[in-house]
Length: 248
Image (tube, rainbow, N blue to C red; front, top):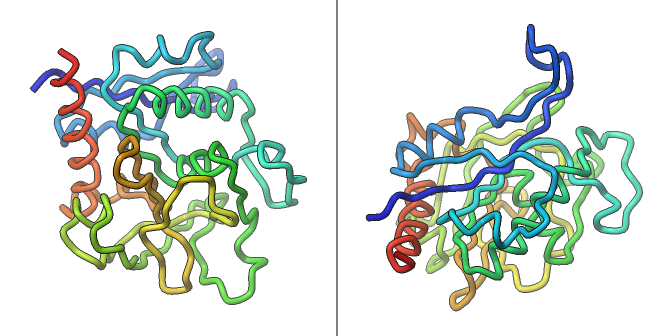
């Protein structure tokens, strides 16, 4: 199999975020990198701003991973910011949406996690619930601002890309810490997993479209201990590797 290079757009780290750094920087939590390496990929961090030609920027890569992080700017889907909205980074929104659009044009396999799932939904014309605690009947899905997580299970649609990869219709032990969620589904996206309160926990593009799987929870958080969570990265890297081999 050809080397599987996976692009990961980074966070922007402001001055003072990293002890003893004189300036800001760019990075991602190591869990994403470790899970991709475990699956056999070579992750490459891609800092902003948005490239002039995102197709050219993705040309060396076999896959794209959109990581978790702060909230997508509500202006991207025509909404005013909720008081609890946090971590807005317009440059990150721009680069991730530009690279996602390019990946879909190029047929590049894409895995999106938590915030990444929100980016996918918004880029496809969908909207977000900005603060789940405001919605009656919703369970607590963690508090990202306080670094509090919850564990819960999800039901997975049989025959979906996610279900086929997992070889199961129920996945327990999902690490969740988010306060936003899909509201109106983006065009062409299909919901394929749900938590016990009915919240959409995963989205895909249907067969015949580019390989795209987006999950609301954080499989990178416990993929080292839970083979089922690691399977999500394995399936993504396997598909990216097939594309890399086909393009050699």
